[in-house]
Image 1 (spheres, rainbow, N blue to C red):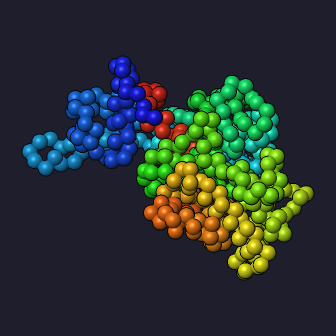
Image 2: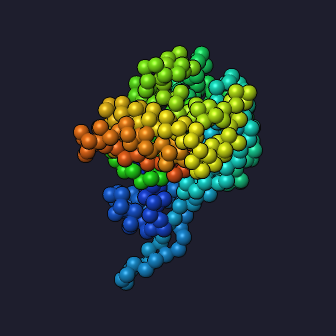
Image 3: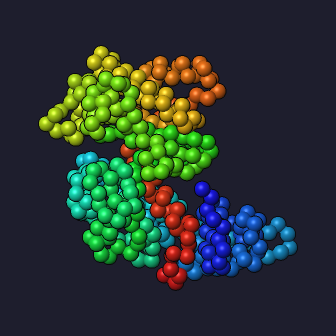
Length: 399
């Protein structure tokens, strides 16, 4: 849905500040005349807007360039990346990972801490997140902390209270985290990790326009749809979630109560168990087993190859359903699926071959993601940075 046009003067100014800041971030160092030409704003407005951004220390003058004639040299302005910090936390099964980025989007080093996973009590989850944020410390003097964005598995709702089941209440969790970080000077957002990862991979792979489906597999299976560069949520935030699409009428029983769900074939646990590497005593402690699985796949061990072939056929069956409904241009595989794609592809291709034969011009390209385990972090950081780019006036002047 298109954003409504601003109707009051304050909203118009915020929109124009955003326009100028985005241009300088993308094209700086640049002169005010270039900003005016690139944004369509009149020069006098650009001069005033740049002055406002300089007062907020979001941009700064960085020298001059010849105008190419007799006129005065053009004064150049550039982004001040270190003025704003965004923090993201990705809550996974065995740990939480925190990472920061500046206003230019340059990420810092990820910091990983033990955690209890995304589906425990919200109070415990909030404690884990607060501990992770504390580990990276507060911003330096003069740095505006723009946003804390939390990415976690499972449905994320906007309900004010927690609810039974896997759904996480964004507003409730945000308040619990803020209560445990009383010195935190910024808003807290909660997002679904698969949707954050999907958007990050979309831009990392430069997949412009059209429809892109994203599927990832770790402890569970999750997905998202990107339509024309935006996450498509659906009516209840579940669009693109493939984990519980049935791929077999008489398949294994899923924890959701149904049978033959995709997650019973391609989740980490399902693949490891099929390959004879499951550990019922520690179902979430999979690091050593995954390393061993990789070794067996590379050496052609039959049981490991059969497990991935089974998973590939199941994923291909799910993609048959997905492509028939959403008609994507690309399917991006994230999480473990990206690592396993060479062994998954034969099964995927076998399932998609009839559709490709019938509709050769409408067959999606299946490709691995490039951001690995940190895709959700990069997506969460981009979401936090976007808030500042959309509303530079949120950054105070004179500090």
